[in-house]
Image (cartoon, rainbow, N blue to C red; front, top):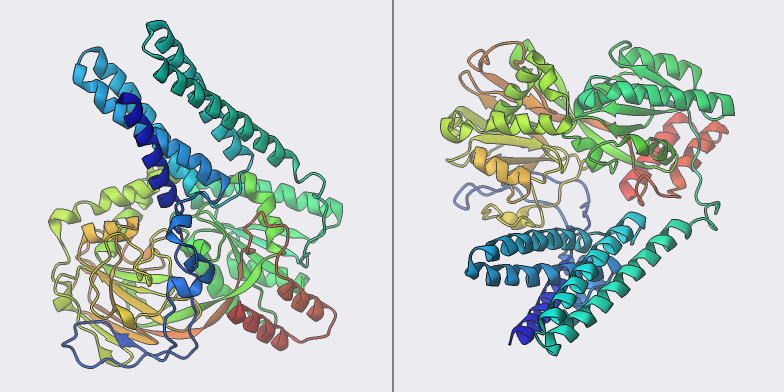
Length: 602
C-alpha cells in the first residue's frame, strides 16, 4: 500500500501542478481606448449620476487571446514548455517528500530529524517548481544547468535509497520502483545538461545575422550619482570608459554628466549646440527623470530629444512602465546602450499642479503620481530619515525595508482616519465622495505605483480585490491618454496589500481635471515620490493646501525594444524618421508629429 500511495501521489501532483503552472501568468494586453474620455465617478450607486465614459466595450481575456481560449481544459493540464516540464517534476517531488515528512514524524526521535530533512527537500523542490513553472523564457544555459544539478541530486538520492532498500531486503516492489525513478531522473539530468550545451553554442553560427539596425545617435547620459545606493558613481566610471572606447572607434559620441556638478538645463543646452540630433539617457530614479523631463520641455530649441531611463532609484516606476526594468545590473550596461538604438517611441503625459501647495510652492509638474495621507506620511518619514542618516540607505534592499518599518506604526496610530472629512475631491467638475474609511488618496498617471504595483488593476487580477460596485465603468490606465486615475486605501494594512499585489485600491474616478482641497494641518503630500516638508520636523508644520491638476502636454520617451534590452532587433520607424531629418527630408515639426503618431499606434 505504501507503493500504491506513493505512485498515486506522484501522478496526482504531476497532473494538478502541471495544470496550475500552465495558467496564464500575465494580465491581458493593455487596451488603449480611443480618445477622448471623460470622468466617471466610481462611488456609491446612491450617489449622483456619473458622467458617461466614451469607449468601446472592454474585451475579455478570452477575446484578447483567441488561441488561448480555444485550448481545451484537458490540454491545459499538460506542460507546454521544457521549463514547465521540469517544474512539474519538481512539484511532484515536493508533494511526495512532504507526504513522507509527515509520515515519518509520528515515530519521534530520529523520525523528527528525517522529517525535518524531508521538509527542507520539499520546500526546495517547491521553490524550484515555482521558478521553473513561471519562467517565460526559453531554457537557457543557467536554467538548464540548474535543472541538471537538481535531477542529478535526485538521482543520487534515489540511488542511495535503492541501496538501502536492497540491503534491508524490504521487497522487490520498492526496489524496482526506485531503480526506475533513478534511471528516469538520470536521463533528465543528462538531457538538461545537453540543453545547456546547446543553449551555450546555438547562437554562434548566427551571431552575425543582420537584424533591424537603429540609428546611432549621440547620447547624453545624465547621472544622479546619489541614486541607487551610490551606484551612480560606479556607473559614471563605466560610462566614461565606454565613451572613451566610442571616441577611439569613431562611433556615435557618448557624453557623461553628473547632475550634482552640472544642472540638466545647462548640460542639455551645451550638448544640443554641438549635436543637432541626440537622445538623453537619465540614470537615476523617478525624481531624476521628472527633473530632466521638466528641463527638456523648457529647452529653447526646435529639436526635442527623446528620453530613455537607466533605473537607479528605489521604486523606478517610470522605468518599469517603459520596459527598462525595475533595477540596473552593471553587467547589462553594454546591452542597455545597444538597446537605445532599437528602442520604440512612447508618449508620457505631463500634468501641472497649480494652487496653494506646501513649502510655499504654487506650481509643480507631475509625471507619475501623487498621494495624500498614509502613503505620503511614510514617504515623508523615509525622506527625513535618509536626509539625517544616509548610511542607513547604502543598499537598495535596506531602502525598501526602511519604508516598511516607518509605515508600520500607522497600523495603531491611524493618523489620517479623519481624511474624508478634511479632503474635498472634484473630478471634471463633479464632486467625488470619499469612502468613510479612506486614509490615503492617490492620483495616478501611470499604471505602476510604489515600485511596480497596479493600484487600479483593471483586470481584477489581485487575489483579494477591493469591492467596487461600478468596476465595469473602469477602463485600463495609460500614461498617454490624457486621463488620471483616482484611488484610495483604507489604511496602512490595505496599502501593504496593494503594494504587495494581494489587493487593489478602491477605485474612485477617472478624469481630465482633478481638484483637491485639504483643510487643517498635518496632512502630508508627495508628488512623484518627493514629499513636501522634508526640511521641517513633524507633520504639524504642514498646513492646509489646495491644488488643481491639468494636462500640460506630452514628453517624448524611449521604450525598451519589444524583446527586452537583449533584443537583436527593434522597430525601424523611429530610426527612419531621425535619418530622414538628418538628410533634410523632414523638418523638426514633421519629425515630432510622426514620432507621436508612431507612439500612439504602438
